[in-house]
Length: 357
Image (cartoon, rainbow, N blue to C red; front, side, top):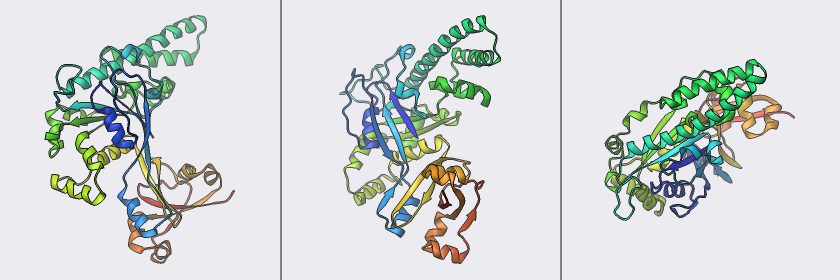
């Protein structure tokens, strides 16, 4: 799973990237380079299983983040960062903090305005792609009539109408067949959108209220959009503490966990992903698969040989395994089930695949 992090310059996106991935880089306005890092998705279920099995390795699910250069107003027509177009989703960082030392590129702090500005830049980038392809298609169709070319033209014309009306393609009501036709264009406004409000320290104890004050609540109901709120300076302070001190710090603020953890979980859910788990003395691990994945394809997430030689899956719920204390006890209790290739793996299933190659 990969997310591109974008935002206006001095929005705090590179600081957020560093906190998420542990890959510490310094923001440099005007510097045109991307940063790549991996973040681990927190999973209390996996933590509990590791406490039970005490494995040699503990491997959470991960998210790959690419922090692309800050976007300047009016850059949409040339916004074509290769890393961004190959991402599964986009994380847009919106500045919600004021600072005399760090002036805002637009002159004032207004997250809702910045979001509209960034969405416009993404729309312009997609419109450029649509226009170029329609021009080439016109020439091709003039030389030869082909149903597939005409279908592609019709889909792109629909995209053009939506974009020119200011509608991102994720909200354009495209049919599954049209989405498949357009997949190769990697349109930016067709990607799921994770909005991240980088709030000020004065909002740390009321992050939900900060969202309302920023005028971003209405985005929570939009299609393929998730919203999260963090306070990067506070998260940086928390990250320097020992685990026990972090919990005490959060409790003093009345928060159940780090906002960064909730952001990672929101990113995971936004892409329609779930985790199944494997557990044992060697390793406890979370595996990422799309919701609705059958057991035989879930086996392929571990190794293609397991998918090819799939026989059946031994499945138990993570809480049932914890309650029983071992797989042997689950067998005795009758909670360890044998499932076939078409079984739809559920979030939190602990699975052992039987296979023969």
